[in-house]
Amino acid sequence: MPKKYEVGEVVTGKVTGIQPYGAFVALDEETQGLIHISEITYGFVKDVADYLKVGDEIQVKILDVDEQYDKISLSTRALQEIPTQRKKEVPRKTLQDRVDESDANGFKSLKDKLQDWIEQSGH
Image (cartoon, rainbow, N blue to C red; front, side, top):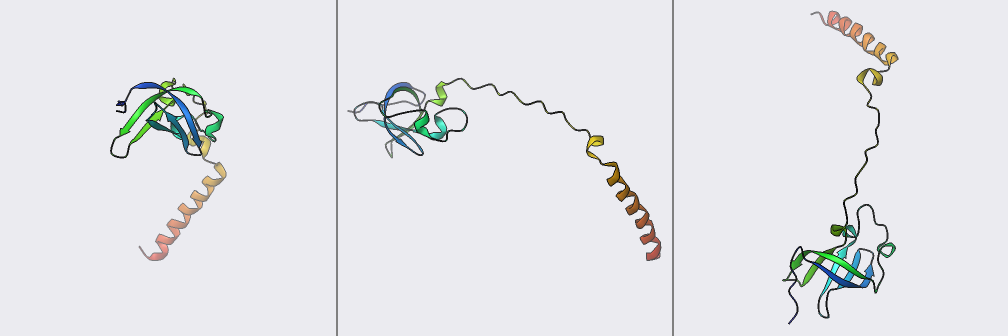
């Protein structure tokens, strides 16, 4: 009888296959799960093989158990610390910085034209 795995459980497994979309991990003799490429680590993963190779024994966290389709979703990322993101300090531009004075002249001429148009329309 295969072992029952629970969501949230952390287990050790062995990488049995690498695909462009993730890595297959054997949890025991009869049970295999998949680490989707998005669950390997934080940040962008271009190639799964840069992080895992067949035969690696790794710790994984169980994200989902779909008994109907016999699928187990795994994650190594869930066991890693969330990297602190340092926001680049970009000086905020004020409205004054964004307005080009030469462009403001265009608005003045529009204002003058608007007055002319109003007079021409007879109102």
